[in-house]
Length: 213
Image (tube, rainbow, N blue to C red; front, side, top):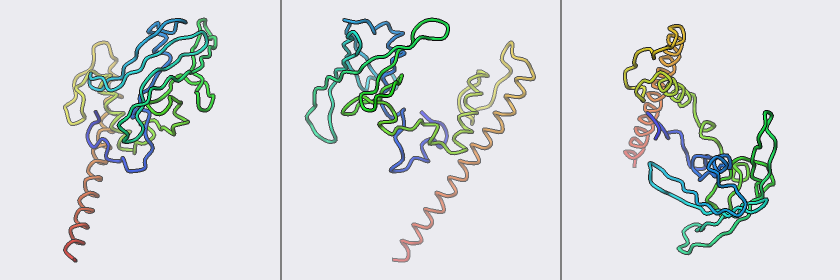
């Protein structure tokens, strides 16, 4: 899950992100060895190690038929869906082949389709944003600091103390990364403080308004 202050900038009407949906990445299917004509496969999405959704697939000569159940809104009944999705292939520069979905909604050649909706389609058709597109400056600073901590092998969380230089890393590189980490952590924490102050002011305004009734 997110770090300090994560999710605080979400608001009603904000674009859903690709992380809110179930991605079906044709590259992962290809690496799993399931894109063979005549073969059937199952795919599962998990959160925290727990399954949250699953789908079946039937591979044909130039398409994959996705088989799943879909529930619309608050309806109690589930609809059985068999959605054919065409495949395409392009040669790689240094040999091999890239596999693509042809989005059933717009015809784009894409690597990832998203669901579960009434149909699987690309992020453009669903209007999905990447999570990074919904970040403020302090969110990006936090993500940058956490990325550096992972690279340095430090414990996650900018509130935790830093560690030493990883074995084999040049001191100049370590000092540069440490400086960027410290500046990013400071910017992120400053953003959290600013956000908390705005929430306190808003709360005081609500309370003052209530006293006026």
